[in-house]
Image (cartoon, rainbow, N blue to C red; front, top):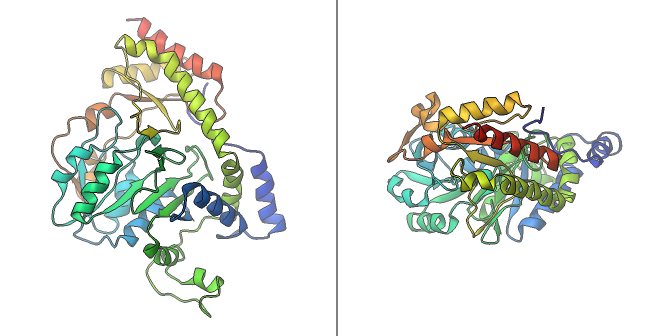
Length: 379
């Protein structure tokens, strides 16, 4: 069976974990491996970006909601086609979610519909960079500026991807990454918040340290630390950071390999798209993606179900993706869909994710593609 996903494994990571345990004797958060991961990412993302490792992308989004001072009665605009964490982080603060439709081509939020969803209660826009493909950020930033709104990028799938030369997550006021085991770079469970405005850095450190000024204490800025603000325990273990670090050290090679696999899928399945059997991912010219996922779109839900079953019968584990949040029990409770659901539901019901991970072999990509072609050749 060709697995849908296998977490990235770099042998050096085992040595780093052993070093954290046996040499450093430091397992709690913000040790030397966390510092090295942070330093690498800040250097990569460029000047003016402060990065804090977190226990998950969910927690990074929660931190962003706290920093933006989202409170009961506020409204936040986001796509419905996203993971539950995008909504959870703001619902936890008492905000009402305003879901808007997605674009058919990229599955990202339709930037032309955002302005219609803005009210005098709107506090933030949360673009989700689906599959590591950037949203139309110039338009989103312009809308946010004119309406005095925060932009919080959910770039869970977007590390190493860019929009007009700028890394996803570094463009809005705040950005978030995921290092879950399904992502291009992993620490099992983990994430990061990117703070792109210096005035929020100090409070970001406090929120991440359970509401204390502990980070300032260890830098010698205060003589003792105490509880000064709200916060929670958002620090990942040093063992998690130790597992992540060697992947960052080889980030370019990992990214290059994933793009090779993505391009091979695209090449192998292009003929089916030309025959109008399926649709393949669309990458706008201003975006550089990161090979996070490869998907195909079938004609409809019924065909998708049959394709997934056929692939399973032929030893390929393919999956569908999100069920739109606005159709869920919690989505109906904490949010509302604004405007017409022209593409969110219909496009989500067509999408099939094919196996994609760093250790995937070329022959496994070709076999999977051949099984997709075999499925359509039966028509």
